[in-house]
Length: 381
Image 1 (cartoon, rainbow, N blue to C red):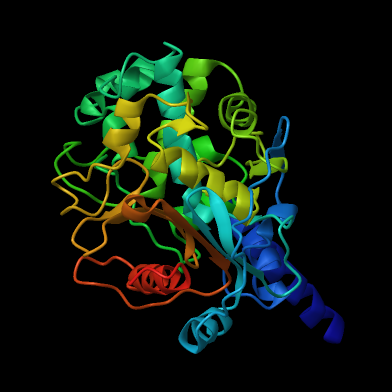
Image 2: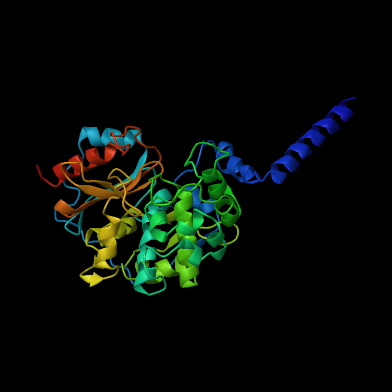
């Protein structure tokens, strides 16, 4: 009797496993392994080591100089409390090209790599700019179907441009859900084939008419740039960003099982090197006075679209409603590179938990708090 029950249980388990594979949800096995079996309820900043990846190689390092007042002033109790509550692992303030404040927790230090999540969007858009500079892509209005001709026969898809993708106005059928294990986000993050996820559905709305943040749009942009440059995006990022900017460490870019970079997320790097991406944008595409990205392209990145209600440009979130105007890279769990042009300031925050409060336009309120605290630390009233 027990043997029969055991056999029935084995049969049911096998049937469930078969059903999961047949319905395209096999990625759930990896998802469960990397979350619930590790005591997590979703992606973490330490996930990079569990996925295949490609290296973004550095060149000759150019370390950040430190300000004469480096770490001399203590963080305020309010800031320390917030950073502790949200399990922050790094907090960095750079003023006038020098590190003013630098703090690490939970075993992290200046060399520790952490998951960028959607901060990678900014880097993907910068690579689009470089591909235009290199005449691999005509301009941001170039249609997506010129890279993937199969899209030319689909009504809305034929209208889709690279600018639509970079500005999150693609009109895809892609609800951006981070906590739903059956979502397209989860399938793209944990799955084995990005093309199977991205190209499964058609564009459902007229592109360019509605702002909707969609990870799938940034992955499609990565596909287009990759086809244009005819090399891995990680190799291109090394040649066009990591080496010219003098990054201190190699980075890694997570891929699917087909060796395709996840351009909607997942560059593993450290606070100091992420800050150099912010510095490049803050200086309108220049590094130490040398042009790296076309200035007009960077201006387009930091110019909010009308359809976004002023909150998003191309690969960057924007707040020109604030008394102190700023723009920023923003990833899951509040990974930030915040740029404040008025004060030539960059703030980097990496951590495990986010601050849930949003402003009237659904932007994270914590960004303005970090800016306020950073100005106090820089003795700016």
